[in-house]
Amino acid sequence: MKKWIAASFVMVMMAFVLVGCGTQEPETVHISVAASLKDVMDEVGPAFEKEHENIKLEFDFGGSGQLRERVENGAPVDGVVLASQSDMDKLLDKKLIADSQKVASNTLVAVMPKASTPVGDIKEELAKARVIAIGDPASVPAGKYAEEFLTNEKLMDSVKSRLVKASDVRQVLAYVEAGNADIGFVYATDAMISKKVQTPYKIDDATHSPIGYYAGAVKDSDVKDEASEFLDYMKGKEAQKVLKKYGFGVGN
Image (cartoon, rainbow, N blue to C red; front, side, top):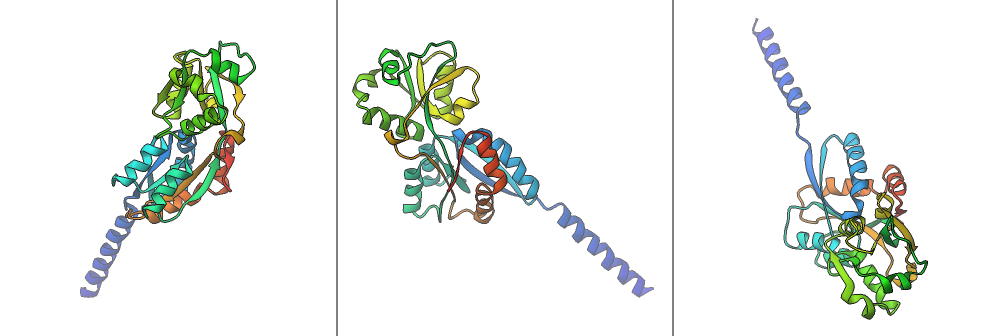
């Protein structure tokens, strides 16, 4: 009888252990991501979670400079994907990120409202535009690349009084979609998702710094291993397929 009771007790305890293991909560991993990658993350995130049931992803999106500052100020961020090597380098220099890897690339374009009639030359277009939208170069990489283009092509002096600066590249797109700007500088991938704009001008890559997306886990994060696991996934076949689908170049 005593042996039967002891055996029953062991079985009950094992059942509790198994139930406990089965209901273990996944680790929440918070990733701050450049705004231009939102559509990609909406697709890649759930695909990753399906393969990694122990990890739950949370994203926030914004300009890369703003995201860098959040990490510098100690915000609860476990990993970043930035559209700016200089912003990533600042985090590396401060030893806030252990390592980084390039996961994608992009192209700068100028978009106009769908109903507009392009003149066929970007310089003429900028000369006649009343309002020109760019991301704020201080915090938005796409704005910095646009500023480099305007400066290198000796256009900045003639357009600076007509520039309106946005908090991220999606806001630039929204300005042009609404007709609040005659022309705006965004990534090719952002232009692809809008049915309200046209893309008459691709900006020559030689007129600005290379456009890359760089990922890294925050060094002091309690879940940096899990964050690294997701960021490594961004370099994998399935994630790169999604990036290509949305018009991004592959990371290399």
